[in-house]
Length: 95
View 1 (cartoon, rainbow, N blue to C red):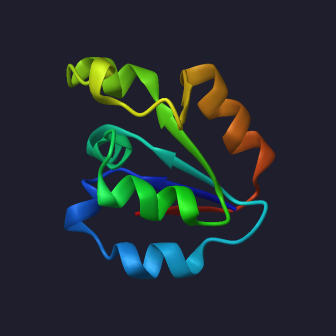
View 2 (cartoon, one colour):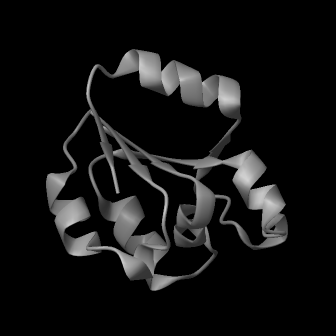
């Protein structure tokens, strides 16, 4: 399943999100969700410890001026990669 986090992880039910993630899932942070990928944040550590692969939409990182603050532990993707993730998963859950 593809999970997309579009709001700040501090403004959603992150505990439920983390419980819903399974091995083989992908979690894409986009819009304000990219805040979850800030270097050395507690939220980043929680997301990285989850069984899903963590991705961050580069265009949204750049639009918020956060390029220098995003952890190197996450994978940046562009819109083409976003489409590929969508095609990979028949189901999607938006957060």
